Image (cartoon, rainbow, N blue to C red; front, top):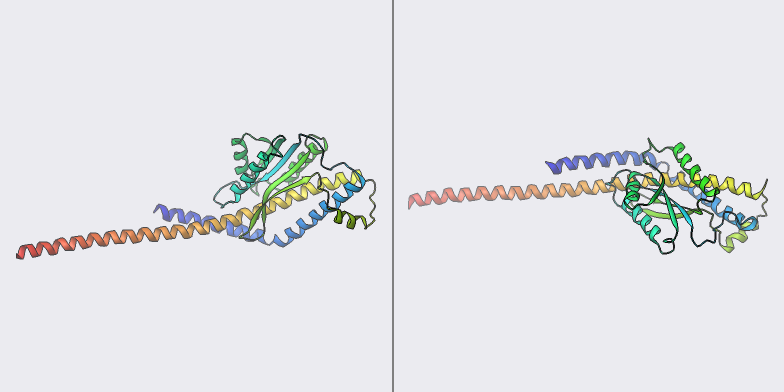
Length: 280
């Protein structure tokens, strides 16, 4: 009975995630186009920075103040969606190149919040990731808070950690530096410089405006990818769990039937043996 009850819960969770994934899946192609567009912004702005200004480029400091934005789910039972993110976060913080740096975290999702508390990481801001709680307005507030600290030089680098959705079977962890912009390769620089672009009114104001919008748009992209990855992982995990529980139920039913048959056989043997004894 307990297995059957668990199976009902798993089926219900699978159905809920399937419905949510179906609603979000229609955004998949648009999300890819959106992400590619903002990544091109990163590419062009990095080239502009290297041509016009050194502001916004990586600072040559022994100790950096790094702000990490991590996206996880609020609940478990979604395969490796949460565990892979949290392992990647821990590995990044404990990396020998970052071990001497100071890290603060924006934790989005209860799983990442609880993990950061257990690890005693410095949480700057936090929220559940549920669509009802964490909407675009809330994300915009979080993004502005982070960008303000960046412009005030309280943090030197902004990094995001989350799952990128490619298909229902493939989601991959991404650890991406959002700000400062990463300078493009030499070939890309030459290609962009050949465009002979001009910036008005001035590069600094342009870069600040682009940096603010890029940060917000990139976080929006990662948030949607996180939703897709979570529901896809949970749907797959619950489907596998349902199938495994059915196998267990079938196994226990078979064992029970064998035990009952053995008991009946023993009783028949006793009756026949008693009858033969009476004849003798």
